[in-house]
Length: 565
Image (cartoon, rainbow, N blue to C red):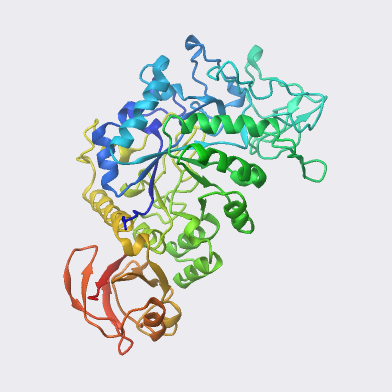
């Protein structure tokens, strides 16, 4: 049987790589601060990313979105700054579903060819490509100049006199102009919209607030929100067919997967219809951003998603454990709540929406991310994701402009981050400018993620939680340590992590039920390999006495026991 690698995703903004200038200017333009390019992902860069154990790269912000940069010389309509967040704009305010962000091209007129070359380079490097699909909303001034002539634009044939019509692409507030009281005045260029269209975060008012997604408009999938959220899905709404065409367009360019933004704001009936149609023609995966645990099974089994974010569950819990706010044994409740669907969940500790581990808003230290990542990457067969810069301890404490200083790396501004600049090192990607601590941290992430990817006991094995057996164990602190086992064929994996700031000596009790459930013999000699150090010896696991080991601060032990037949 061919070994199946575990899916390990690296999320990165191309905007951070390439022609960047320093020092950076707060709220700086593209001329002042520069911007990363597709071309910066050279074969060398991709090889270095793959070294981390990566199987898929999620290139965030590929599809053309609204921006304050003027590309009208290339026949791209200029956006009104009233409805653009930040100088660079939000990657989630899509301006043209059939085009790529011109910021990311060396030659704007060749931007699609440059993206296609990036896809090929990524494939040649042995990794797959994921991009965002933003199905719930688009930029206020959405207009596709790259669509095929036979494709009607969104809203082109809408009846704007109706608040809702199943075949309208947008929702309207008839007779009311859009009112944005908080935006700066640009004189003759002040943005106007009549009738007002409903804002992307289901804001059914002509006067969305500053904290609403005011730069976007919500797409209509046939749900009448005002009249009891009744669905009108027969005949197929026009928006469904338009979205299918867009997904097929990108899959046809070699994209291997779609991270679907705010997927739960789009009716599951649409996903039930569209995902099988795309998969009939292309081998692609679909990842859903879903935050309501009550809808998880609906979007997996009825919506046909391959994976969902495990944010309201493992992420939230592990974050609290890392910050010493809840005991480590709370992690057991995460997998228990997901019984039967754990393999469909995507684990992570950072992404563009969440605060950086090393930020003052999170742990103020990158080291707690190591035990957190061991748990997230090794607990089950499901995918795991790492955010670009996480492996370097990026603190995300810059005050870049629109986003402010919030512990996140901006998605709205022309910006780059120091840790990545030092790793990139003028395109050499040798990390020569990194500190010794940053290099050590990256090496630790690489070891963990490569173990997750390549060890069959991780990618295919059964899981057994040992926390219940160690409750009340005076030699094991269930508040700061977590322990579990994995089993596949002849291999048993014992994983013990330490969220504490100091080294700990522990004794792990292994109950007889673990041997019975996982199907291996008590007190039988095995070759024990420490997967983090590579050291091997003969050892055994038994109920007769607890397994004793020393745990480094903010780290753990990953011990593989290989038994003879």
